[in-house]
Figure 1: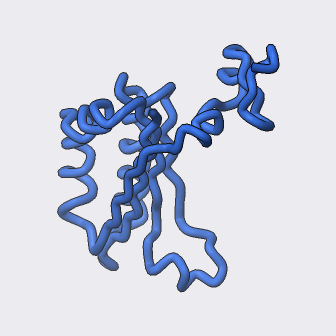
Figure 2: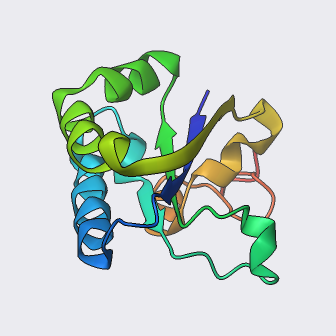
Length: 133
């Protein structure tokens, strides 16, 4: 069962754009950890939500996929994750919001993307594999 991990970040007003850019660059490197499912870790921002007030002031977001809860726990406990967050986020944050959930078995097929899905016989339209099962 896939676990989806989402985090929303808001920096203090005195944090420079250069610092934020470095944080994003370093955060993206976490996709190479073996506990990140198929290197699926995306960092985005700043928010383009319209109206911007709906973003509640959060500037950046992280979305990552993990094979199971143990993989998410491994990600959270990794020295790389600790280094990025303790160096670039926690001392500079105004707020953050974390939300993790297990993907429902009926929706698991949506966790297969592009060529990976095609190579594994998964249809992105309805979850059935190419043999019709």
